[in-house]
Image (cartoon, rainbow, N blue to C red; front, side, top):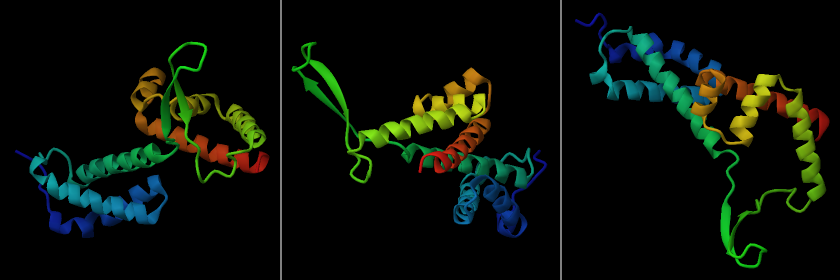
Length: 184
């Protein structure tokens, strides 16, 4: 027999502040944190039939919120750094009929025609990555530059996804600070 019962009509009064504080500590954006708490309550209502009563109501809601936070980061990180890629079949190269991959120009880039600035930025980024703690630099490089999946990185480095995203966040913050001081 389940130890705990759900009382959705009391969730806002009992847990909204706690869930918001949890979310704001991980997101650092009050509006997004509020949205995630609201989504948590909605998901809780939708999946109430699956609640077994093994955990306290607040613990169950926190578990839902954790997944919402992870989904939020996945969504925002999947939108970053995606460039359109065109594949062309070319018979004008030495190797007859090679596929050529071209990166499509970013119409909003102010550096598009400046090879010198691109090279300087690349060197500045490499220099800043070299200043990161070793594991942080490795995680950042694997995820952001090499595009290795979260699961593969976690398995290879024996870390959990939360640790991975914390390291990536810290690396990005440190890189931005480093670039602001040394390049811009």
